[in-house]
Structure formats: C-alpha cells, structure tokens
Image (cartoon, rainbow, N blue to C red; front, side, top):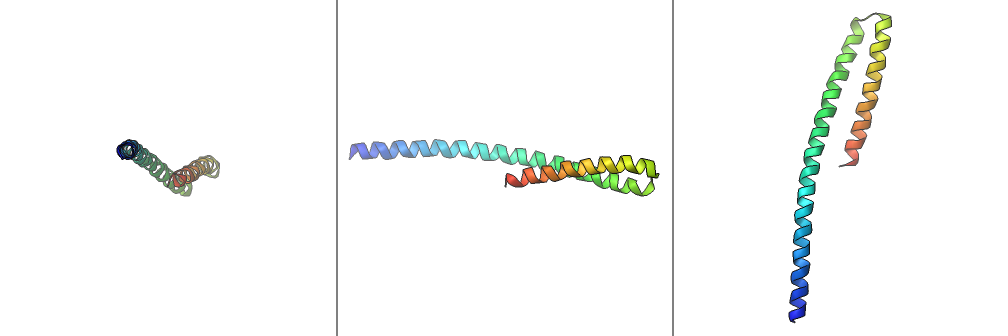
Amino acid sequence: MDDLRKQVSATLQELRQEADELRVKAHLAKMEASDEWKSLESKLVKLESKAKELGGVTAEAAKDVGAAAKLLGEEIRDGFKKFARHL
C-alpha cells in the first residue's frame, strides 16, 4: 500500500510539473501570437495605403506601387497562414 501511495504521489508531482511547464509555454505562445498579429495588422494597413496610392499615380509609378503591393499582400497572406496553423 505504501508503494502505491509513493507511485501516485510521484505521478502527481510529475503531472503538476508538466502542467506548470505547459502553462508557461502557452503564455509565451500567446504573447508571441499577439506580437505576430500586430505585425500582420500593421502590414495590412500599409497595403491599404498602397492601394489608395494607385489611384493618384502615373502608369509608370503604378507599376512600382503595384509590384510592392503585390509582394506585401503575399507576405501578409503567408503570415496569416502561418498564424492560422498555430491556432
């Protein structure tokens, strides 16, 4: 009976330690996700700004702005996919 109590106590102690470690990891992951989300939102605002620029630029400048907007859009899309995989 004493051995059983020791085993259960040891298992409980291990599980508490694992729970504590996972709690810390979850908290850090949440902070990292929040930072990543803020970065993606900032990039989305930049893309919206570039989209507005397209209306008032020459055809030559529109190519440059359009190319930059396309790259930024792809970067945002990739970031969203990466973010979604963590959910």
